[in-house]
Length: 415
Image (cartoon, rainbow, N blue to C red; front, top):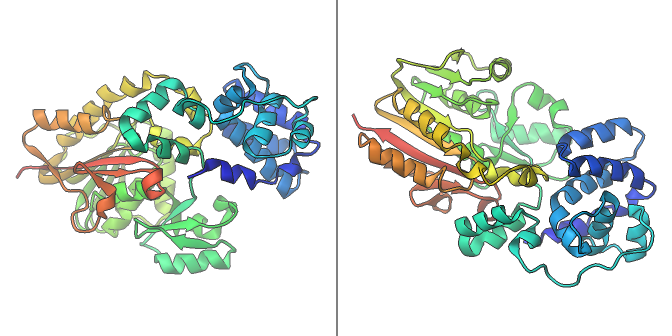
């Protein structure tokens, strides 16, 4: 993949006259304010902008925020102001002629940029050194390809709510709303939105619970639970609730769906989403569950979230190396808790959205050494494509599957 090809296709000429607006927004992002928040505020404050101008500003905030490390290399300095970084993006990466790039960025005389390819993966992919080293260890010869895919925004993916409609009917309904889609490659529930990003949350099908926004890799993780009508299923780390809703649809409103999360506000939002999605047999747990003996548990643990870096241009720069070990004790505690809540013969699915053996393969191996009453099952036996399986685990990744990176282990308790 050439992530720079996308940059060369953007409407950069629409930035004409917007250099002060762009510089102000970029300065906030470079100082640590989340890029999404800065962009939302900037576009709200400049409602008069045309669609092309809004697109150009969005790409400016996203790409300078993301490529800042490589742009600093091109400029030969690590302290370059926002306007110079924008010039380096336009001229050095997007191929805008130097004089035009200088005018659009609001700088005087065009600066001379370093020639040739940057000498390290960290500089080529615009990553902190520690993170590039980590990905090189995790992926080996695939590291360059993986990191290139982190520098292109992921697709908008929807999951059909099978309680209310089918994937084919949803695609037709969305088309009637002016939104073109194509089926996912891995999940039978997935539709990828084609073309420009619509106002998703203003779409009637989303408002009516016919679908949810959910990455295709996340859908595969939820599907590994293989929840069946009549069973009792627990989502131990419900979070925003996307996988909870998926489990509920799998149960077809026959059985019991239990959901717990320590964040009470998230549970409140989840209740509203469940109602919208036509789920009826769900129960929100306001205290950590104890004394249960359920059929299946999904434990989608808090993690370092290195698998979804393409979703936020600044996330890579807001993390520290300690993130690689920070969540491991909590993850092990949650997996132990899940193991105590599942009945003999039942199933625990442990999942993360990160690329880190310490949180993934090694953690599961340590659990199995201490819990001989559990065994590792082949994930999605009979339906999960072999391309999504590595070392007996689900492993999806942007450069292999076009999804965010997800890991999952399917664990069965002996009867």
